[in-house]
Length: 202
View (cartoon, one colour):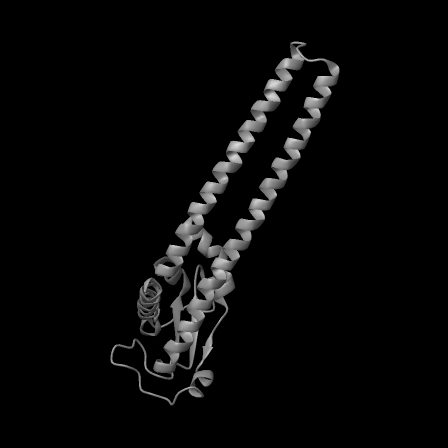
C-alpha cells in the first residue's frame, strides 16, 4: 500500500525541473564537489520512485497516515456491522409479529435515520482522509522541491529532471548512469530531515 499511495501522489511532484539559471542568481557558479555524480552544468536526473520509497520523511508521514486510516476504517466497519445487526433484529421481530404497526413504523424510521447518518459518516471520513493525504503529499513535494533548489546551488547543474515508472510516463527514457543523482539526493534529503527532527525535539 505504501508504494501505491506514494505513486498516486508522485504525479504531483514529477513535473518539476530545476534550471541552473534560477540558482546562479542566488550564488556564484562553483565546481562540482568531489563526491558529485556529475559535473556542474550537466543535465541530471533522479528517480522519484526511489526517492519516495527511501525518503524517511515520506515513510514517517505515511506510517502516521496509514495508522489513522486503519483506525477510521475499523470504526466504519464497526458502525456498519452494528447497523446490519439492528436491521436484522428488526426484520426478525417483524417476521415473528412481535411489534405493533406503530412501533414497527417508528423503529423502521429510526433505522432509516441511522443508515443516513452512517452513510454521511463514511463520506465525511473519506473526504477528511483524502484531504489529509493531499496535504501529506504537498508537504513531501515541498520538502523535496526546497531541498533540490538548495542542492543545486552547490552543484550548479543546468537542469534536474525526474524519472519514475515506465518509459511512457517519464521524460527520461535513457541516460548515462553517471547523471543519475538519486542516491546522492536521497542521502541529502534524509540527512536534512534528521536535522529537522532533532531540532524539533529541543
